[in-house]
Length: 240
Ligand code: GLP
Image (tube, rainbow, N blue to C red; front, side, top):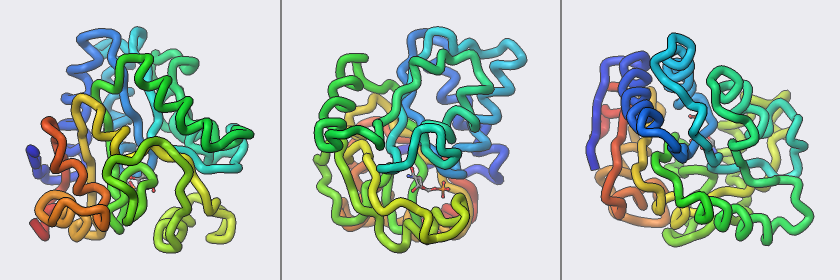
């Protein structure tokens, strides 16, 4: 695991854009996209490079990590909508090649299997962006998630619902259930790139990078992976 500590959010974004841009330049990149605030600067930097003709996403495709169950796709906080408004709408990436779990599927258990099969059929994710929850979750794999889990339904903890309430009108509007790529699914990506900003993530980053490999800190599953880059600012690195 390589840990890159950068001075501020802008430098974190530049470093992540350099890594992702490398895959995009090779052509036919399969990107793994994450929502949340941590990757936003990186998305803006990638969009700038695309606008200025430095990067061409026309042959890329993407898979999203997770989705709320029961939110319509056109709800502004569905991850389907968020990833479009925050990233896809600002680059020349074909939106029909940006796939996400369908949180409105009639057969939710079957949807997890279908999604994993779609990732496998595409040849797997080349580079997977990840944020980290304050409790160490990645995607929506809350503590206690099996380290080999596949895409499936999970129930959010109260802490995560509280953390994500800022995106909704009130805490009671945050859905209780989600579909998320499993820890086993995520670990099949060729390269994991974790982004964390701020002192609020310092404990989670220390547990993920230096704590025991344990389902109690789902992000620690990265210790099993051969190619991981953790790109963080100084406050997020303060407990390493
Ligand atoms: C949500 C997402 C995660 C994300 C986490 C942290 O729970 N499902 O993918 O990593 O939030 O979000 P933020 O980057 O806003 O702190």
